[in-house]
Each structure stands twice: as C-alpha cells, then as structure tokens.
Length: 433
Image 1: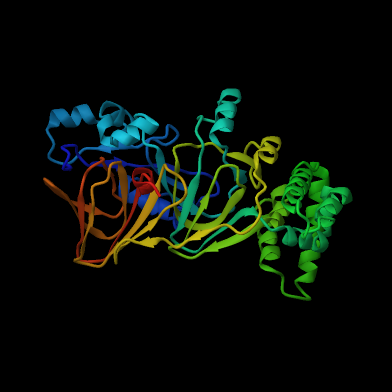
Image 2 (image 1 turned 90 degrees about the vertical axis):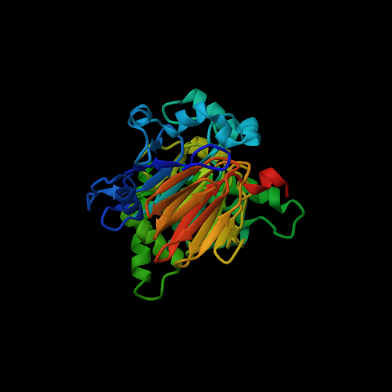
C-alpha cells in the first residue's frame, strides 16, 4: 500500500477492551469488528466494550503485512507496533504534526459498544493530568489531556454537563431525597440565587460546586437509604402518573448500580440522546457518563479518567469535584459538515482530531485529498478498493488502515454500499479558523 510520498499505507491489527459495561459478543459492533479485523473467535456472553485504533500503550495496534511481501521483510515486520514504526518513520506524521506533538499519533480512535452505563467521570486538562500522573501513575497512566468526541452509530444516550440553574432549582424542589443528602443549607444556597442579579453566574457556580460536592461526598449509609427511598417513591408514583425520562433513567441506573451515589447525581446532568450521525464533544473537566448504544469515538491520545460514581472501579471524588468547570446548560450537538454528497466532517474545537463519516453507494468513488497530517481509516460496512498514486488494494469491513501525511487516496465502493470512518488531525490546525 504505497502513498504518493513514497511511504506505505499500513493495515493495522486493532485492540479490544472487554470492560464489564460493554455489550455482549452476540450484539456488540466491537465484537463484529474484532472478528473481522483479527479473526478472533467471539464469545457470545463476554462483554466487548472498546475497539482501539492508535498507539496508546494500553491498547497498541500492530502492523499487518500485505500478502506477497518478501518473506524476510515479513519476518522482520512481524508484530511491529504502530507506535514503534512511527518513531522509526516520523515523517509519516508530517512536519507540522511532528513539531507540535513529537513522534507519536496525537489522537486515539475507537468504536464503543455500551451495554450499561459507564462511570460518571471527567478527563483532566494537561496541567492536572501531569500532576495526577506524577502522584498516582498506577491510576493515571499518562500525562496528557483527553478532550473527546462521540459520533453516534445507533441511538446513543449519555449524561453530559450540568443542567441550568433553573432546572437545578426544580430538582431540589421535586426530589426530596437529594435535599436529604446535600443538606438544607446547601439546597437553600441554590434556591436563594436571584437569576436577575449581576453576579448570578459566579454565585450559581459556587452553589453548584457546593451542592454537588456534598452529594458526591455523602456517606455510604446515607446514600443507600436515600436511594432506597427514591426508588420506592418513583415506583409508587409510576402507578399514578407517567414518570419523566430522567426519573425512568434513574430507575434503570439503580438496577445497574444499586445504592450507588451516581444514581442520584444523574438528576444534575443533561440527558442527551444522539441520533445516528449526530456527535457530542467533551472538553477537559466536564462531567459525563455514556449510557447505551454504539458510537465512534475520537480523543487526544490519553486514557486518563477521574471517576466518582456508577462504577466498581477506583473513585476519586475529591479530585473530580475540585476539577470540574461547573459550566451549565445543554451541550452543543454536531450534525457534521457535508464536504461532498458522500463525506460528512465533524470538527470539534480541539487541534488533535476530526472525524469523517463516508457513505459510498455501490460503484461510486470519492477522493480524500492529501493532507499534511496522518489519518486512520476504519471500513465499517461493505467492501471496496483504496488507491494511491502507485498502489491499489481491496478494503473490507473490519479493515483498519493508517495513511501517512501527504497521501491522496481514492476509495471506490464495490457491489454494495461502503461505510467508512476516518480520524485525522483537525484541519483547522493546518489552515487556521
């Protein structure tokens, strides 16, 4: 697979994480892609959570040699990691990428299959990431920040960011169990804020920080008791009226994580439902929890997560509550920018990455022009060909391909529709706003 700059396109063997919140092998997109990409046998009842494409040490990709390469070269290249190969061939990243991020891929590309809620979490900014990695390297594996974007494949549900001040007041009026956990003084601090005042934003941020920290820091005994009362009350009320979507969600979360403080905290967050083709981006220090569905995800190359609820894993409540921005309001949903009839681009406000979704009808072709940075392509559904200046090869679903900088690529669908996703450096990084 040779590119016009003389470097080769590289097929990759991806990595899968079997976190317990993943969907079962029988239904997970991640499991389907793993079987296609590696030939691995899928266990129908095992969870398959994340399909990783990139260089992060927690899930490194390996180069797959093309058939017909010299045996000696094949032997030499066996099990060469993408990270190792890039370090030996740094020009594949392009000059500007090398200058900014050094000789590593600055983004990590994933597919997620979410069977049950992920933890309530946030990702640290660069400064905090360095500090956490230095203090607790066994928990925080790297010193990088982790802005991210999720692009829905199926309907995808998430909790994301804090609700508005008005909505928070309504929660404190309607959910007595939360007032029990945070205390009447903290609740009153929120209720007394005059939204017409000049310093409302600062007061709201301070009050939200206080009330959320009180909630997340409540004792296990208090939490268990309050959630039990909340569950009983909602089940009783469900016989008299239709529960709100948030109330129904809280009951679902309680089944998944009985007695967990994350169940109550769901009332504080925006409940987001993405349709296929819609995307959501998350900056550092913003709280979120993915709930269900399949998505393509891209992020800066990091695996740093600060967790505080809906998880059996380590919780760092103090760090989470102190690091959050406490910004309020519904997140921006991206519908993508149509670059052509076949390509939609999703541009988050982060330099490290962008994502393209490409849907090619059978027999049609599309050109991905040469760009000054690297790309990773995932063939999601269907079959077709990839062609550079001096190479043409077949690409089938489950294939993952690394494309060096400055390589023009022509993709053609075969006898059925071909769906691909591409991750690359954010084009605004090269061209400015």
